[in-house]
Length: 218
Image (cartoon, rainbow, N blue to C red; front, top):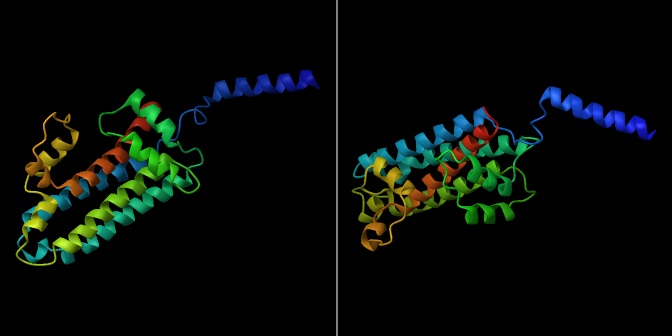
């Protein structure tokens, strides 16, 4: 009986070696999530640029953008469900290790924020789903402030500050810049913090999937 067990065990090892059993070791990379996350990031940046351009017109009010928020949140919800359905999802502790090992330069991966969200997640599951939930929360924060600040024409200073006056390219660059030792508080107050929070969370989502792709050798 013992010999038979050993033979079966060795046979499994041999078959695994021949089949390349990497799925149990490397968490799954999902091309649909990857492309969806990058498209979502692009859609969000286009939305911010459009709100800056139309700030003093009827197209620059919250009412004109409510459907865009719904669309962004629906797409994030779809990514979250797809990630939760993956049978071999990666938890956030593994994701942090992978980020440090194969970082693609897209994601900042705020370990403290992600870890806190993961610990509060019901039922655990894929870190990709956790990151999607963080992004949804940040978009909802922006939506609420948009509704509060941007109801009228012409746009108030508060509404303009919400989306910022710096170009989208500059906002992206500032998110990825190394923090300076000195901070201009007046400038920081006008630097669209809610927009940047959304962008960071979308970067983390897109970057995490890219890290999985790199780790899987895709």
